[in-house]
Length: 339
Image (cartoon, rainbow, N blue to C red; front, side, top):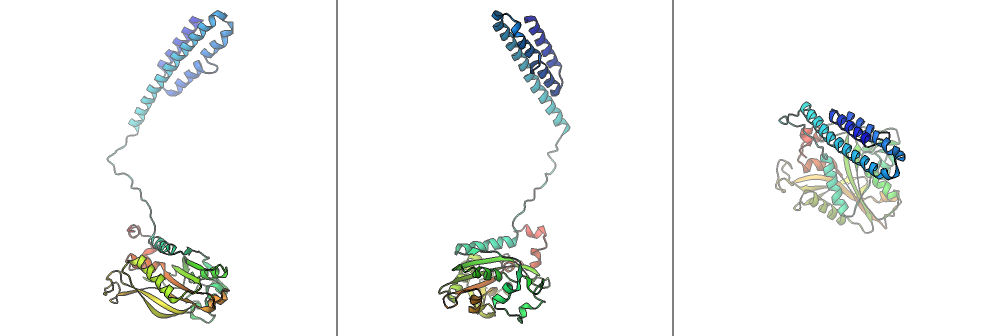
């Protein structure tokens, strides 16, 4: 038995020493140490060994196994190192070549402006509500106090799908849908994409974005509207910003106004940016018309409210001093990466 073990060990070591790749080395491992290997067969033959000799034979088998395993591991490391060295020689990398630049995207100017507006109003207790872009004429016009003969319903301004369905021209329909739910009080803004049949130029686009705001509660006055918009302007354009309200007309608010802010470029003294006036128009607003409240199931004798609407692109153009709205949609990375 001793001679047989010595022979197995010598044969295994010789084969290990002569092996030149890892696959061949694995075959040797299986041939000598596997379930059907040479050393395993010796152990299976222990039943034929005299009982008093079994401990000694078992020790010899374990010693042979340990020697073979050590040789296998050392040869494996040597072959792996050699293979790695040859791979490095084949796959030479010229570290002097310029690396491929990783272009990382970022938020669009419109998105940056929208998130800033949302942050301001959420901080004042408003919630952000979204609605459908394809809207019923009933919500887009009728329930906003815009009758059938109103100029805003002319096909030159509105994209009609049929007599009852349009692409929304404002996000005010979202306000109507929220009012109809009857959950009062309401403090919300409704940002989203809107559509109007306009020619594309520096200040117009058939598809753009609006942010409409609505507050409905008891004892809401025009003073609440002025205070809210004054705070919004200061947060968005700077602490020294002042607001000016000019009388206007909107069918869904009464009284109505347009809001100007002092030019944040010149501080109100007059410059090219504000065309020498010292003021820049930013949005329209007013107290919600009592008839609009009635059509949504709200008692105008008990509740009142105000609404306002601002163009998101206008905010972005003013905030970042962009003079052409088309730049926002041309996907020119030379322009967009500035933000």
